[in-house]
Length: 91
Image 1 (tube, one colour):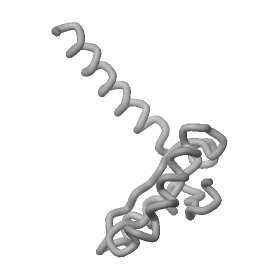
Image 2 (image 1 turned 180 degrees about the horizontal axis):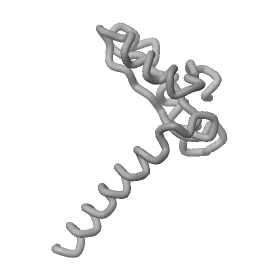
Image 3 (image 1 turned 90 degrees about the horizontal axis):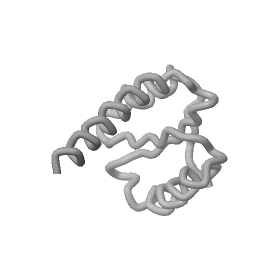
Image 4 (image 1 turned 180 degrees about the vertical axis):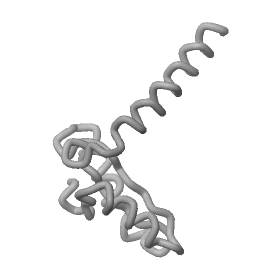
């Protein structure tokens, strides 16, 4: 379903989409267009896009095509995972 949502094809395009939007929230789905989970998210996002268009805009970024943010998000999610593991160990 990613074909129903606008794609950003470069890191520069992602930056510009965020910087250019002054009134609405920018929602970006980072992932793979072929991934089943991403396809499910795209379907949900596409179904609400029209309803939220006055206060949010949705974009899709395929992380194979645009790997610029992979390291940043990998490190971020790695830290979250470490925090969750340490919380589980304390319980």
